[in-house]
Amino acid sequence: MKNVVLLGGGYANLSFIKNLKEENFKEFNFTLISEETSHYTSVLLHEVVSKAQNITIEYQDILPKAVHFVQDSIVEIQEKQVLGKNGIYSYDILIVGLGFTSDDFGIPGVKEYAHSMKNFKNCLEIHKMIAEKTNHKSCEVVVCGGGFSGIELLGNLAQDAKNIKLKCIEAMPMILPMFDKELALHAKTYLEKLGVTFYLGSKILECQDKTLIIEKDGQQEKITADLILWTAGVKGNEVIENSSFLKSQRSKIEVDAFLKPIEQERANIFVLGDCAALKDPNTGRFFPPTAQLANQQGIYLAKNFNTSSPAPFNYLPRATICSLGNNYAIGLIGKTQIKGRIAAYIKMLVEFKWILQLKGFKALLG
Image (tube, rainbow, N blue to C red; front, side, top):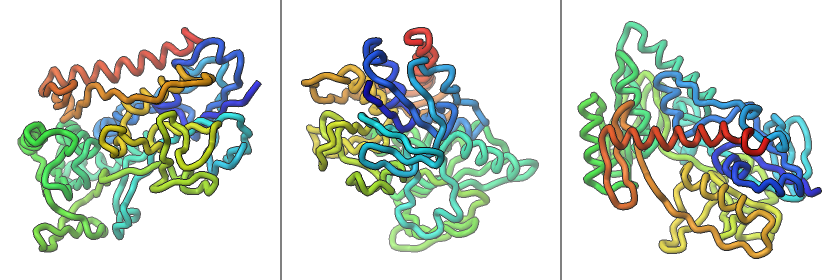
């Protein structure tokens, strides 16, 4: 039997496993390798920062018995084998579903003085820092980045944290560039009513201890903060960058319509999720990495696994919803705008459905 090794236990690889046929488990040996013993819902990391929400599920509770789980930290991908800190793992087929890492874009001081939302444990630590700083005194927190992660974090902190003053720095003239101006402006106004101060069109030049140097309209300005949170950008996993065997840029591997590396003939390697750079055939631009995209990639690969003539992957974006706190959100379903409690309710249903699907793994395939 051929060995199929899966790197990472995020949306893409779990969706792949969830959608495999029963005969696949009889034809292949599947091994999932992760440095953590549990899967965490990465789209909810802002809730961990704001209120220490537990968003984890142990792999032993969701993986089929036919999937062998190994806890290890991957160091490098090589031809026919993967190097981990604790062992070497040979593969006939490799599925790379490693998560993201923060991208500081080479801005001085970001690594030293800013805190990024990297994973569940890291976000718990940030929550503890905020709790300590806001205990019986006011605390200034600056969120760098006005994209999805930054805005959802601001919304939750504004509602869940006490004695906190929130600032957001964004280089673009408006937050949430994935939405049209009207919807983005609605989100900005809503958060301003919750006490968030925005610095738009502001380029971050340097991060210092409790200080950010920004440039706005050609003028430099200092923004003070007790805590600096970095949500301004992500890239693929550092394992990709460390693997000279694979051609990559910004720790991402460009893949074709069959999710295989496009610059190399690697018929036995698939790349999904945050480490995959996939172009939209209609626009020629790379799709932004989202849980929705990773989920669909996993489903596609499972349905076409061991198929001699697979159809190309076709991404169909559905609902895109950004929460602005516990009971309010904005978003798009197709071309229809939604906002308010109904949008928050729909987002909650999507997240709940994912959890139910994970918990159904053992019952269906175990």
